Length: 379
Image 1 (cartoon, helix red, strand yellow):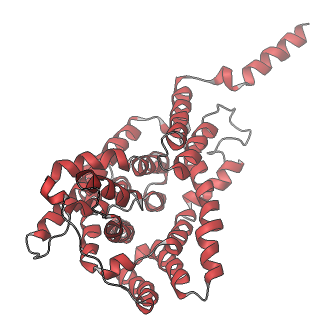
Image 2 (image 1 turned 120 degrees about the vertical axis):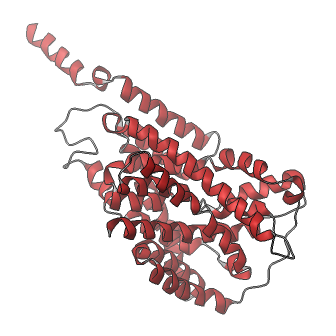
Image 3 (image 1 turned 90 degrees about the vertical axis):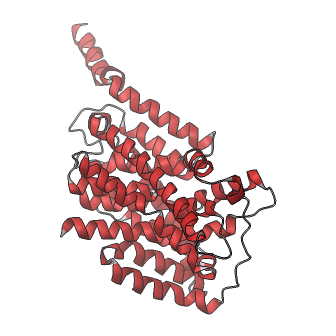
């Protein structure tokens, strides 16, 4: 009987129930909330559901040395996580984004590209703010990139600058991407008048097929010569777009925007979620990152709006300043938010197509911003 009771006690001691403490319980609740927001509220379900379930996987308490936890060298999760830490997954996602993206709205009215550039001010202002708060330059750079509202870019840069911060920065970046419909509208209403929100946009010119094919080649050369460190991201983005527009490689374009990006999104979401292991993730530094990330995203939104109002001072035909909020690279959610806020004032005012121009230029802008930060901090 003694041996049997010892075995029972040993079994109980090996269960997750026995090892569960408030830290793991907190993260398990966070994981359930992410899944709820993704399913019930439809906040970026393709991101929040994998990340939420990954948080659950990463916060089941296990004994060290069994090869189960994501931070153990011989675990399966650790091998999958190498795609994050080595910066492999983000370029593959950019390949799929490029194969799905239509740059014609941006090419039809290049002026709107400036709104995507202006929104990147959130990255650099938050970088300076993080430095002022005592973060090391590499950590400040990784935190600042959250303002681009681009999860893959945030992961890629953090993997290069501060890999030990991938968990909190990735979760913060994807959280704010998913909460675009909640965070942006109040800022948009605060910084614009009703008269400005009622501005109607002119129909854009038609972009030729030749322009669409030439753009990814010219865009790649111009952007990567400016910020060579952005080559892995922008190279794959423009390559994916070339596959889409050239027509002759349609099979490759279909693979890039379906099976490739879907597979990588699953792996990235689950492993990023699992990296929030409570004993590593729950630190005062993580809280600071979430606060600074929210500030960065808010500044990026405000920068795009204010810049749109600024250039209106010099334009005969005004643009709707709401478009500036789409300068963050949360594609296409921030463009949809612009459409929604605009139609609250005038249901017949359709801004979505126009908002896609700064939205897709924001994708390029955030990658360039990451490249500039990386090269600046490394050198």
